[in-house]
Image (cartoon, rainbow, N blue to C red; front, side, top):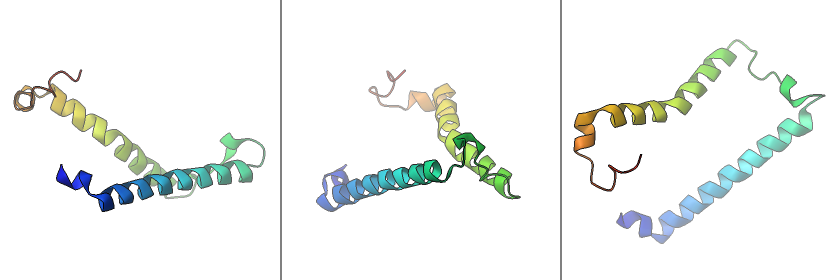
Length: 89
């Protein structure tokens, strides 16, 4: 699309990617630095909202795959795909 060729859009996209990578590195370092003995003993999810947060995270992680599977299995939706999309899998 024409918007992807825009310099501002590319710069914002690159900045967002770098910010996400830096944030992930900081969180990873924090987890390793604050782990007392074993990194697997960290208990961020044990409070009362922990289960809800885990459920939301799992839902958000699996939702794109479930939607893709639904669309892939639905023959009517697949019929309207362009030819280059029909050979994905």
